[in-house]
Image (cartoon, rainbow, N blue to C red):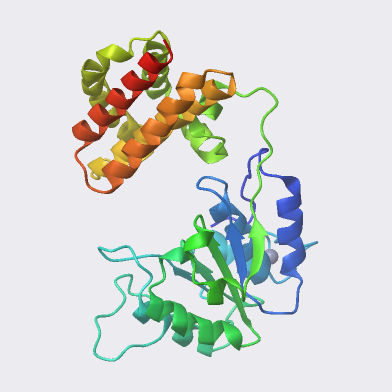
Length: 321
Ligand SMILES: [Zn+2]
């Protein structure tokens, strides 16, 4: 983990200023970084972690030279603990927060937070707990965490991030300092930006995947040209684009549903961009695509969800004639 991470121009500079301001704070309330998927929460969290650990941060920015910064760079720093969802259910489990007797050890092999925080820092200015996707805490682990963040050791700092603030336990949320990640839209938005739904990280990935963009744009063109009646054939075409989504690194290739969901989200984003240009049918189709996304998430077969989407699209295009 480097202390000099590049952060995209699209991140609002005020976010970085606020983060830098937090580094010199003496109070230990956890910092909770929030924003939509792909809004650089993880990178902002890393900047904060570096600032907290650095022995001589300059205006909130890690120096990059001290022992703490060097150990972070070489990933040997003993004063940071990363806590992320684990296991089949993808949850942050109780044994990651506090020692639990007779339970299987955390699958990462890392100590629970309470044990990690017991001793003072070895190299860094602080000891830092970095918690990723903190909405994935189980109720038990959230309650255990709550007790810990109410009276943390003075050397402890918590940096957390989430893309789903609404799913967090309000008691945990209310004890955190919120740092929202805001994005400045580019002056000239390209198709990758439109397809990303305004997520700069996703837009970056799409720019590096011309084949996927071409396939998606081709599909959107076919829809715009009122070839919606061919929907059932288009279902097959979309099925082929699913693998391009995995190739572009937008979802885990082994998780077919995640790939299908990501594809539907891209389609909905592309349709929404057309709707903003005044295409009222595109808006209805975007809604149909989001409904299909929910169906796929709810374990309905992809082909069925697609057919349902095309049929509702067909109805709406008839209604407009
Ligand atoms: Zn430093």
